[in-house]
Length: 336
Length: 293
Image (tube, rainbow over all chains, first blue to last red):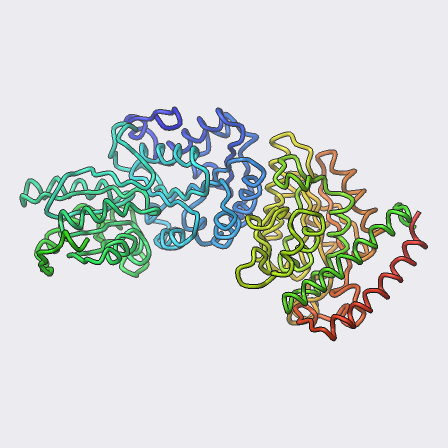
């Protein structure tokens, strides 16, 4: 087990995803004195409560100053520590963008960013607190590994992986509870490798974060109602993207839908499209996500429904794409 | 009268003079460079690298080394000669400064140039990074010191003040902040572009033990650094050394003129400025003889 810390489904039905982060980082910090947690007046919101009890001296609160938070983190990393820097995704990616780019990524320091309140998971707070551009921003930064866990269990896996591997990581997690996808941590999580959570040969839905559970629900529904075999890939790592899994999906199913709680510009959908385009073959393709619009205000599930990235939206999109024509090519295997 | 001995002061002046000449030479090789802001901070670089920093040239990443962070990264044209002269990098590299394919760009990359503790250039980053290295020293029970220098125009970046708050809040007296107050920005004098004064009062209001010195006077600089180091032994209010300097210090023709922020140096200017540096060096030696112990 990565990191030696085990969490299960019971943990994530009782505590929010960020709280699992809080438990995971607390476990790691008790084991390794090099690890510290840095926050910008969000120790409570980013669930550092356990750490405040176990290792209070290594929780650095810089006040409401995200730029400083990243600079301090870079300095601590340069001095041999392993800082976990937590803050709302909207601010870690935008307010401190230059520091993330220059202090963390350019210097390639061993710092880990825990970007909470991802996507529209803090939906009621409005667009100032929605993070629907952070994947586009972070994905473009060299040296940075970008992970979007699908639930609390996967968050624990991602945090452990970030701890065990040198280099900057950006882990994007939701506010509150995520729908439970995994029962335990032993499902083969590996950075850069998609996880197939539903088998299928008719069409592939590639999802990340909160959309993975929705995609799985949609696949199960479509199998019963429409007799469709929908492959669902949990693309938890946005960078480096799992090129092989994408190409295989294109070859096997020739119909792809991506779904993310993020703008369709620059996020998961774009990453998948880049792989497909460079492979030399297109296929029937649709990107679900925020369609170059700021999201409405509301509960996360309501926004997901409005934007069409919940199970119903995915079901509708699958039915649409199943009707789409694409160029038949007998030499498909030779070309890819 | 400074506490620095005449002998040591004169040796440091000689080193500062040599480094000014090497910086001028590097600027000519590069074709142009940030010579103004490089020269204003060069006396500080000299005393840090030749009197104060506890570093190992043969082990640039030695974990107990003192850290130095040049937040005003554009002064790399002066910093690179200091690091090469010290032995961290081959002095031949200076001939490639600013050229295609070189490891030495205008703003030094800490992953490419040995001895550089932070990749700076985007202004307003160094203070927070320094706060981080100083905090790490405290948490890991290490005695090393962190020195950071910002430009004065750079203080317009609000992130500096976030960093100052952190250094003050955590009483990081092991982090010594220098402000290179050369009174110039690219577009003109600081007070015309964006009022900065009263800088000393601002730093005091942010909790710093603030010492005002002539930053181009090696004796005064050393006295201030000695005081800051003495205070660093205990967790207390941090020290800011506010250095009143001249942009282009050492070359009479350009000293104090904001236009020297970034200059091209040709053979004629090189000859002219070399002569002025020599005259300045003589005057500095006279001062060292008069004011040194």
